[in-house]
Length: 84
Image 1 (cartoon, helix red, strand yellow):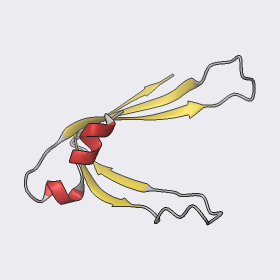
Image 2 (image 1 turned 90 degrees about the horizontal axis):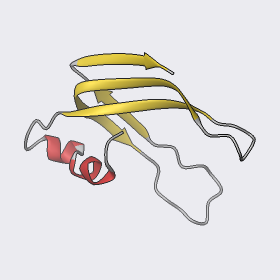
Image 3 (image 1 turned 90 degrees about the vertical axis):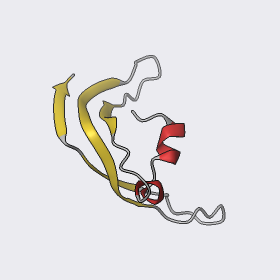
Image 4 (image 1 turned 180 degrees about the vertical axis):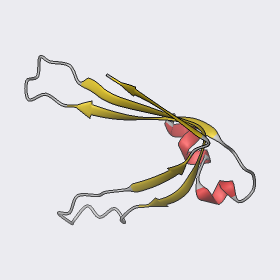
């Protein structure tokens, strides 16, 4: 996971000034219907030398009923997959 503070400074706007590559981890989590069970990590992708290629998201509108969905496209020099 990328720390939120680093992600804010790692935007495409900042990328124009310098090529700031990071290590990023993407998780797939299995959620449970039962409150007493923990979330289980199904897959873990670790990208070395990752950088943001594209970031899009809708405007936040408190009056709307739509779900806000963001898209973050990453490019990496190396990818490692770990199951479980």
